[in-house]
Image (cartoon, rainbow, N blue to C red; front, top):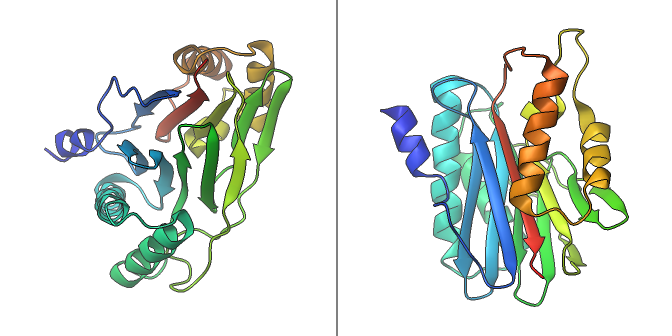
Length: 232
């Protein structure tokens, strides 16, 4: 039941926002997941979100559902991105137990190719261009760490064919049989080998490379990938 409810919160497939090509992959390690992914269109552009809440199992999935409801509610108010994340952080902080937190990227992609995003303690967002992939490091703390804090906004303009690639630590920390982790460098190398590849292809190549790296080892953590590309 919990798994079915959680899957019902995922973005509906086939979303086709004007000016953008978007794909995601969601793979829980168990019946339920602590990973968070959402996509929906607003008058000001596409809102995209990807994150990872602390803990495992049902408790983590409940926190994920709480985040989903919070951001959906705040998005309807038409807030600026930093204000939206600050309000969500305060609500999350005041309604969860001490030690519970979430890392998260929340972004808005406008029809003209401009993008703004907030990273709350999450892994670097990769800006993939024709000449390689540049990591955009987080400049904010995880949600739930402090109830009143500010979250800086990253702003950039994507050229046609540029992609933002988001992922959870189920990718970067995925182990192989030798105990090594997949790592960020491997993602950047993969992106450099396939410049201009569409989001569906990028995610497929990434999963193939991860499977090859892991050598059949069952992965212990939830895995979620999200690719947002400015369409040609």
